Length: 155
Image 1 (tube, rainbow, N blue to C red):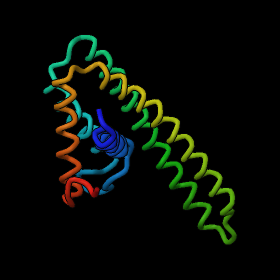
Image 2: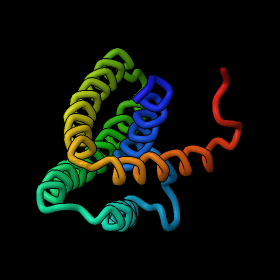
Image 3: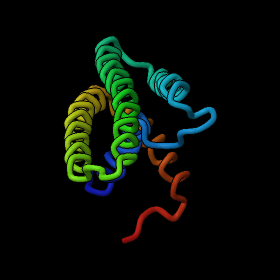
Image 4: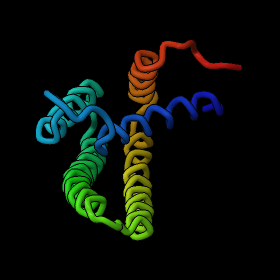
């Protein structure tokens, strides 16, 4: 796989993980309660089209379980952090240095989680045959083009 294809693939995977980790709209049908179910139904539907072997299904289930756990934990952590942040900012003299350190810790935690999920994603993708890989890449490209229909890429 050449560099361009790798960048497109991993860019798409990063976008997918961002959506799964809670980045995105926070209103209406995309509320914190509705989002996980929708995302996982959609993900399951896409994976179902790949006609996975038992080994591939096992790898997907491992990835899905990890994503679901991390997704749920991230929602709860975000809710708690919002409360902490609002309480601190409401004070006459908020401790901005402490909030900054807390945010840095959260960024490190999310980075660690995303690294482990990316490893699982790479293992799942590696278990796919060439036809299945091509289907995955095609879906990612289509999604990326819908989000940014600004051309293939700048050269």
